[in-house]
Image: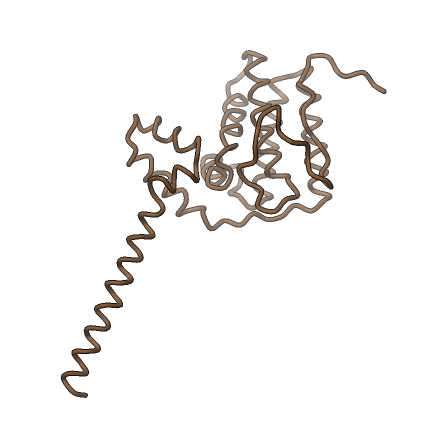
Length: 215
């Protein structure tokens, strides 16, 4: 092999290495800053606040979550499982009328079980499960955080706070039981659209203290 050919091959190899390094650097930059802010929404702001305004530290934490859980693919729920979870959520809402704290605890346990069935880490590893959910359901994961915190708060507690925690958790429940594949970051709040065709509606009846009249 001639010296000129060897030099040419070395130059080509060097160009390939430099190009690969540039692509890797660009990819890493794309996972930070505006990209993370778009992906995590309210979770981004929460992470920054928890890090006392240190944006870089918050972005490192969020980037680590994406690295660990970004490739997770949710397992689908069949119609029977979706119906079963809808009925259990309705039972939780009805139980809230007479026993708010017990109902919130049931909702926390139900969300953990549902998330595990969809392919997220087991509910026994709450922090890891929450981190994974935050990557794929960033807009609604705080509802799970709130209901989990309320469930672990012990006896007593303000009923309105418990009511708010349960209502907040519903958005994530709706996402995880949706019949629409990959439905993430769905709109929340009292004005959200009704459940799609083929999915039983399990919207709360405002969690009033009195049960609705039987028909």
